[in-house]
Image 1 (tube, one colour):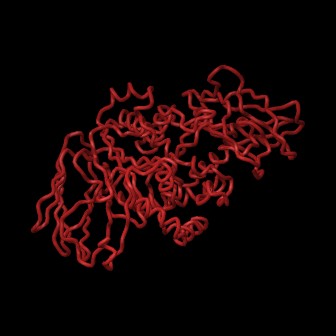
Image 2: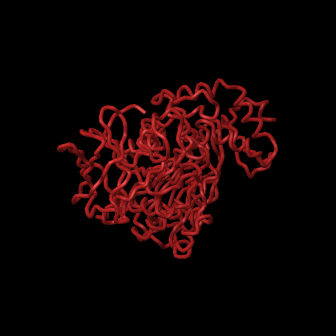
Image 3: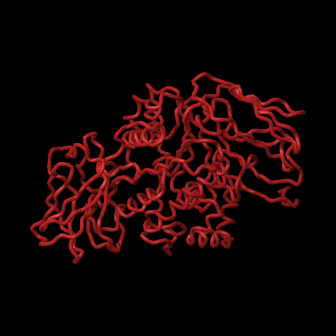
Amino acid sequence: MVLDQCNMKKTYLLRATLPLFMLVVAFVPAVAFAKLTIASPFTDHAVLQRDMLMPVWGTAVAGSEVTVNFAGQTKVTTADDSGKWRVDLAPLKASVEPQTLSISSAGSSVLKLNDILVGEVWICSGQSNMEMEHTNIPDLQPLVQRAKNIRAFEVTRMVAFEEQDRCEGQWSDTLPTSAVAMAFAYYLQKSANVPVGIIHASWGSSSLEAWMPRDMMETVPHFKTMMEEFDADTKRRGKIKAILEGKRPWRLNDDVFLRRQTNILYNAMIHPLAPYACRGFVWYQGERNTQSMHAMSKRLWYARHSGILKYGETLKQWIKRYRAEWGNDAMQFQIVMLPGYGKTLKGGKGNGPEHPAAHSWAWMRESQLKALDLENTSVTNTIDLGHLTDIHPKDKLPIGKRLALLAARDTLDMKIVAQGPTMKKVEHKNGHLVVYFDYADGLKTNNGDAPTAFWLADDSKKWIKAEAKINGNTVVLRSSKLKKPLYVRYAFAGKPVVNLVNATGLPAYPFRTDTFAP
């Protein structure tokens, strides 16, 4: 290649639909940018975030003056020595009236972006269950017909060895392809009554670590190990390069190999988006990280990502790092809990998808709930959803609806019940336990039967199904097989059968009160 003869840093980008001669090789030359550009998240039909500073950035001739005009505001700045510029628009009011964003600089053509709206902007990311398209979900089709004032920016799926300044994608006045993102946007738009913009960046089979920037090596020890292995693995890096330079379209095995790598999805698909103003992040991911209970298995299939038990702490570090990237400590993060699924891993002491001692997705859900240790986070409860054997269940409509409820409460300041009962405390009383809940007004079961999925144990660590009875906003638990129960696990299983809800029909969150090791 010609670039190999030059002293320039190469970065390979991956895009399944590009022919070989169009494979992008980005490099940073020694000269400053000469062309007036605006960052890739800004295109015609964009939605800008209301009620917060709105960064607008791009490139121009070094030292040149750049003027940005939008919604009656005029901001002027000077491109720095590397040709980069940025202005921050003052907080904007929501608007369904199309407006024009213009950028000008001496000696360059004026850039004009048309049909710009202002409203609520969210980034929706993750792996295959976020990627699943709404056209595959019959329940969502009535929403498609009724949706209005929703737009989407679909980030092209690609990878890069180094952080990129630009990504490929285009705002459109059509719905996001993702079923979860579309349902979320639909119900959020109904609640907010303003335009909703979704930036959709997901890719099936990807681990959390695939979406992590390299500098998280400083805060996540196992990620440091992974990146050191990645850098030292010349065979793996060579295979990535060979796939990029090979025939299109890729073979399925090569496609899967690429998206399962560490860090390189973040470089190409997330880094170019920051610091585009948005209300928050919806994250539906974790299936890839459930392959092991431990951080680094030696088996190839499980290698190079954290396991179930380390996921929670890694997730919290990831959230904090993304907030730093956007310069917004209050950036909302909504985590989608992994729904019911019957697969269990070896090593557990229980059998079957309903047993609380099995090594199942219950432990991943517990890890996901650790996100709540941070402010401005929520976890959407899906314990009543999912499929026993299908890792890609189609019940995406309730997920989108519950996400929108939480967003309405937490970001629109609506006084609504947005979540199901959560365990507040457990009292021991004369051979039985009493579970107290928050968000439990009208506590009931959705089928009129006694509550299910409660299990009891004493220090023997043997779990026994509990006899459960609702008493006001509490649940009383006992078992004739235990004289003095000490601990309770609720819906702590791969695919529990649950029926406990509050008056709004939202399901109770899974929990456990013991600290037994898995």
